[in-house]
Amino acid sequence: MIDGDDNGKYILDINNTSSKYLQIYNHIKNLIIEKKIKDYEKLPPIRKLANSIGVNNSTIVKVYELLEHEGYIYKVVGSGTFASNRKFKKKTTEKDIIHFDSGNPSTDIFPIDDFKEAINMALINEGSSIFEYDEGLGSEDLREKIAEYLNKRSIQTNKDSIQIISGAQQGIDIVCKGLINYSDVVFVEEPTYNGAIEVFKSRGAKIISIPMLDDGIDIGILKLKLEKIKPKLIYAMPNFQNPTGVSYSSYKKKKLIELAEEHDFYILEDDFISDFNFESEDNKTIRSYDDKNRVIYIKSFSKILMPGLRIGIVEIPNEIQREILWAKYSSDISTPGLIQKSMYYYMEYFDWDNYLKSIDKIYSEKYKAAKKLIEDNLSDKLKLRKSNGGINFFIELPRGYLSQDFYEFMLEKGVSVTPGTYFFDNIIDDRFFRINIANASIADLEKGISIISENLEEFFDRFKNKIELRSNKIFY
Figure 1 (cartoon, rainbow, N blue to C red):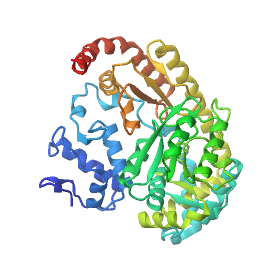
Figure 2: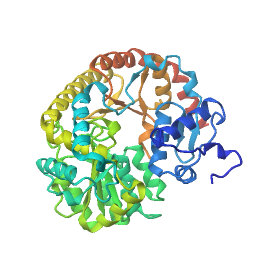
Figure 3: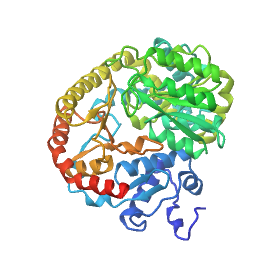
Figure 4: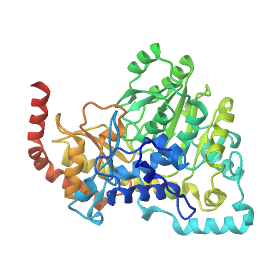
């Protein structure tokens, strides 16, 4: 049970009417709205809440992630997660807000009609067997089809090395369950995806952050750390990283494999959009260079196909396959058969390659438009992180200003960004924010970036006194 007399309020009965994480999200959201969770009250830690409700840690990670994006909670590094009253101070309505904080692709790119046909084909051809548990690695047909796709992308693999998973978040979770024990060391990029940080912490891992440079992780600092500390694995997004948009150079991709072999650790590669080139000279995965069996490769389809399908793969070196397979089985036995078979029929019969070309065109045009708008409108007042593709732009405020203040200020103006604190394990200087372009249209990009540009001076003036107050508090 959760400690505390009043904390039984978090417990709820999970039913089959909707996703577990949505039921928990709505339950906690209503507790906050109804003031049963008071403003600034500390919420239970992820592991404790997951155990009490009877769900996976990754489910609670998703719940807290969504609550934070919606403004119902906020995190304080080293202290925990707290209820927030910011949601009720918004001066704009939800429908008026331009969302640069959502990583989900715009719904108008979804192949709804074709996928509906694929579902019908799956139901007709597979019959009632489609609703049985598909134990083991997942649908053999789908694994063969995905292996074909990966082979075209220079990843030499086969169906027996592929485990079907319910999205990248579950992939990270089951790898941790299979490999990470309490007090094991995990290296991560800095900044990086918060959902991964939370999963590593939930397993009791010690996290060490390695800075990101414009061509990938800082190899010099990584080598210095490796001289003193042996990690179990390093978590990396080598192509169009979240949140920076940075891609590793070919040299650094190969060097990471050399270091993994020399120091005996695994690379957990999280690949969500390396399918497309954008402006990158090398969008190949680290896994495609791996000749040492050092890469555990997670591939998510959430940015190139409907994210609600919750499907992806983890490709695993043979020597640790049993541990990962058992961790997957203990999480949810299997990814739903209807989704797996529908995905197979879509990839097999609806010109998957042509579909990817159409998505590539949409994302590339959106990226080029966003990059030009940001450079033309913001670069004279803000520092832009170098990017060569993807869906994220990482931007730095002048020293002394805080991204949390910036987030709340811009929300009042009708634009929602993501504060940089979300992407750091430990942060001293909170000056960064992320613009994600996956959900926004070109028109939204033009309008939203104009709103940011037009209101920067007001933001600087309004929060100038706060800088002076903080400075006085520090030095006197």
